[in-house]
Length: 309
Image 1 (cartoon, rainbow, N blue to C red):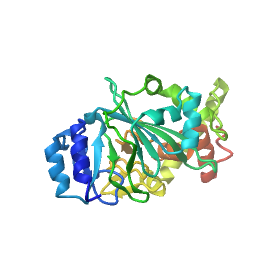
Image 2 (cartoon, helix red, strand yellow):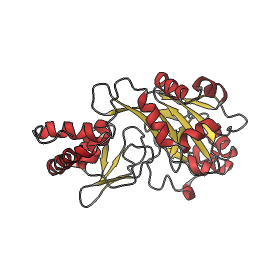
Image 3 (cartoon, rainbow, N blue to C red):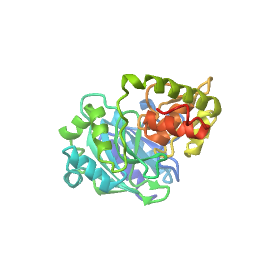
């Protein structure tokens, strides 16, 4: 990387990207203020000189200031299945878009003239605890690591299809999936062979729901939201947590009342609300399924006879 990182950095700035540095052995930037556009480098000469004197550092693009979005494929077989069901040909996209290959691969596009949020498609794990990421639609004030940076476990990132003439516009069909995210997410879950959708709550079930709420109260009294995060390998740093999936800076905050608030746009915990211990358990261990989480929590607490939600 040392022989070419400065020339890569200069080229990225020439393409109009706002770039920042990545520490050795990390998947993305972690330094204070890394996601502040004012701290990004977008001048070609400045970029060349910065990385020429620091060849051990990797490079990442801030997506929103760079006017980029990306499709990050974690599970190629299932991603192709999900996208195909939604009318998107993954092979065609990969044959025509600039593509970064590392542990998995990522397709890069020019962002549309509208604000998009980072979204994640995940399935519950077959064994019933936790979830597995299928793909991410990445956007906003987050960073995508660029070649020739080194992945912590998969070697050097590389361009299998470089952006020689810049980045193509985000295809309309992918943009449609982003715009109608609730429908996209529901359709993706229907393809999971072991996913059991929750039944609608009927009037006669209100009593069960109230009992379920008592299970939630008992669960919150017996469990700590931060401890559940750590059990899922989130890394604690002075009252904040970093997601093991994204490798971003610690953006999950522990509030004074013990609840958590997630600023990681691509994390399943990024609901826009403060989360208690049961919320974290429901999202991380049961893919957000309220009924499944209540049943499992009741079993953990020895309350099976009281909650049949």
